Length: 475
Ligand code: LRH
Image 1 (cartoon, rainbow, N blue to C red):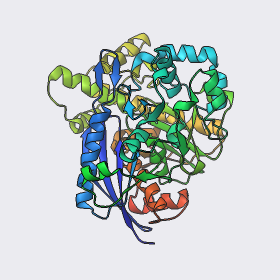
Image 2: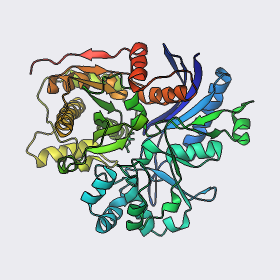
Image 3: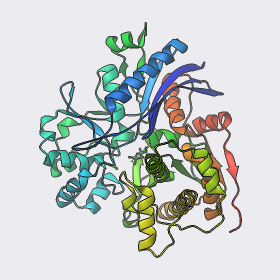
Image 4: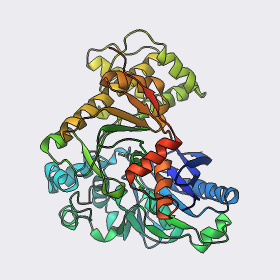
């Protein structure tokens, strides 16, 4: 078995990147080839992803990757979950909506009138999020748009289709649609019929590790590739890839995949579908190798990035985030701790104002300076993370003795330390690029550059990227 080189296209809610990795049984080397902004666009009908811009940037990055690493053998794509493009033949019908668009309220009501939430949970195992694809598709149905479509592809599957001409639905991301059976991992055709959604728009399911196809000749020409390159299905839901690359002992550890969202939970072999799990809004998403991600979505660093966006708009200049975080760490006064899970924080908008409103409504002193707002956000996130870890362990009847934080949030020292303090447990931080790592590991295994089960892949991650440890302090 010898090492090989693969490329990950990793699309996040604020930026995308193309990363190349040389993966062998004993070490992984990763290098970011390009990073590009992901800036959603508000038009008259709502908030959209600029998927064409993202695809162009991904192609440019892959072209550079191929020039720099001519032996590159495959490509894997991951992104945020739930959002999709509708297709008719080869044509994309309109521009995909962003899950933070507020149009889906009608879809939620209409879907629940057909199938109540408790029954949905028993069938799909998903926490209620107003943007789960089934509510978005129901809104498209009500708007008369769905009937025009003969296909629906989640964002990574859309990119794979544009690269290869093959339409598939990778199973980890398909599990976030709400239309996949949590018990047998197949499209739930009975549920689709009851929701009046056409099963015919949904493509064939594939598992992470499956070869989707070779890049089309026109794509090869654009990338300057002189030989066929495979596109491999990875854990195309970014959280599935991130959790795969958490260097944990899954039976005893909780994880927090912390980027735009803070995804807090456990890896299980079987879903937990109890009333208590549903009432606590815990989800059972599909992971790589048949695992279940039992987790809760906490609002995450979105609270911070959206606050920074408001301030930058007001100032007309960029904010130095490192400086701002240092100022937040230096705040000594007690700051308000608010409920980071409050739905008012979901949509785009003036986050500092919403936090102040929340505080006033709940008899808390609203943070005054920007440093205090940031401190308040981080304290509130740490508390919400700790709560979610405790609830997950209780609901799944598991003992947790360490918590791993991966993703961008693992670089936030204050957040890691406060999470450890709130839980009274050690926090192990890193790797930062867990999502891209999970992506390249699945490709490398599919290509035979490495082998092993999840525990062995995680041991390889731990050897290559040793986590940083935060001990809990007395409170
Ligand atoms: C994180 C994420 C998360 C989903 C949300 C829509 O990027 O994929 O797992 O709940 O985006």
